[in-house]
Amino acid sequence: MITRRTFVAAAAAFPIIARAAGKEMLQMNGYAENAETPLALLTDYITPNDLFFVRSHWIPRMPDLKTWKLVVDGEVTTPLELTLADLKKMPSAEATCVLQCAGNGRSLHTPVVPGVQWRYGAVGNARWRGVRVRDVLHRAGVKATAKHLHTFGNDDPPGKVPPFHRSLEIEKALEDAILAYEMNGVPLPAQHGAPLRLVVPGWAGDHWMKWLVRLSPQADPQKGFYMDTAYRWPNVVGTPGVAVKPEEMHPLTEMIVKSSVTMAPSRVKVGTSVTIAGFAFSGAPDVAKVEISDDDGATWNAATLDSRHSPYAWRLWSYRWKAKTAGKARLLARATDSRGAVQPREAQWNQSGYLFNSWHGVDVEVFA
Ligand SMILES: Nc1nc2c(c(=O)[nH]1)N[C@H]1C(S)=C(S)[C@@H](COP(=O)(O)O)O[C@H]1N2
Ligand SMILES: [Mo]
Image (cartoon, rainbow, N blue to C red; front, side, top):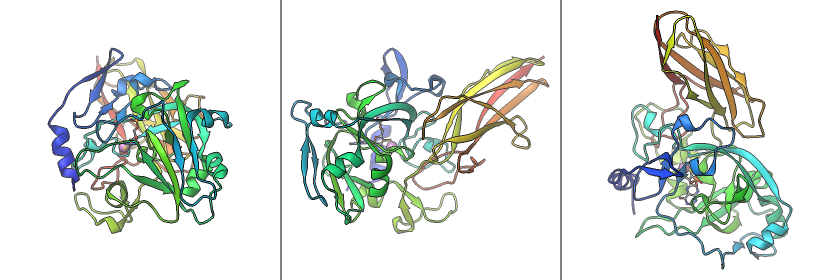
């Protein structure tokens, strides 16, 4: 069986730079298709499709769109086989929300952990349109015995690599998950899971199965590497650098509160004011505030939140900062979500490097 370490070795061997629509995306390796968006390009409320990060565990096997069907089986009274046309005849649903890879920011954890060395850009905010999972499962007559929704993509991992088989609590799937066939107003692009992917608002990207071919409600969670070993979060806060057993962890679900600075000048004249800007989001439906500090977190001032929002979408923010004294300044941003969770100075270290959310700081040189 392939280990995480083998993945990393394979991944590190082929660094290349990919270009999307003439703009630079940062390709992380060659074995799988992984590209993050430079933070400076994540300034729009809606992340354009050609700038949206891509995370695929291996070179994907795209489904044949002509013969594609979604199979619904398992704990249901009426198993289904639905074509895209069948799905499009059902009432449509839309959600504008953040998709973030659980490993976004992995390279910034201390000590460093193995895995794709994402920095800040394995995240984006898009408008997803499709059919509610709830509507499809009700049509199939989902039984009360079903507690977990098993999800299957059309991926074809090489050799003995375990397949990316996943499941999530049926309660969340029934609440607000969507089977999306559109991304930002166009048919779901191939690398983002065409023709159909799962959208799980507020939850990390590993739940957002691409190239969906089968949904199966079951009594128990899915088994395998991507449930029992990967995508788990420690039950208790541990010591940085010290790994814990999979049994001492549980499946990672919601994202945690985070803000990133996307725009800041590197130099500014003393006595003048400049605008810094960024985005903030959480596993809670909204962000309550974003604050900026120029004194290493001793005092904070509120940034202005943009009015555009929808549950689990990000909030753009901006802040006017006045450079009072010459020298080096460091501006820090921290967000507080609608449930009161405050972004920490230091993210909670974990052995897979998930959900990095330390305060993001930018350096500004103030000249006389
Ligand atoms: N079938 C399939 N679905 C998948 C994956 C995959 O490798 N195969 N990667 C997952 C992970 S870890 C993430 S972060 C998101 C990334 O979605 P994107 O490539 O559209 O940004 O897809 C998820 N869905
Ligand atoms: Mo991910």
